[in-house]
Length: 174
Image 1 (cartoon, rainbow, N blue to C red):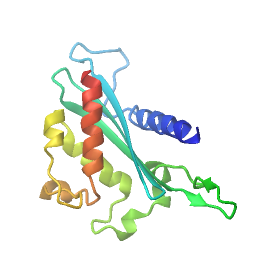
Image 2 (image 1 turned 90 degrees about the vertical axis):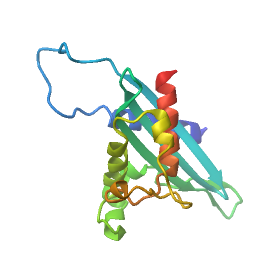
Image 3 (image 1 turned 135 degrees about the vertical axis):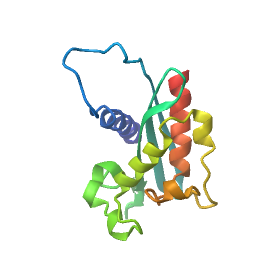
């Protein structure tokens, strides 16, 4: 039950994170050039050997199915077995984005960027792409991007994020 509650909270967090305003705004309401966007959400989990990896992706697509904005987040947790034989969840159930400075990837990254900065660089790279183009983003056998332009801003594994974003695109188009 706790896992379901967590997944629901993770999905809500990703959607809310994506709701922040960017760019300019107008107090006069919607402009005539404004277009309706389709929204999609995907949450994908893998569990193996007591470890759980959950990736959530939210996308906003234009009418042609091209990404206008994408947000990704990830939760990693490991079940622990107590002396009584019961499995327990980790105390910290925050996602990587929620951890912020408590997940100090920037200190060990070859490009000196935090996890959120790298995930945002990946999402920025996907702008204008369709679901099929997202699926075609190439990775090496370990899940890292092959594109040198993407690698300049994102050295984290992207294969799971790529699949989650493609699934979110499919959700938006359904």
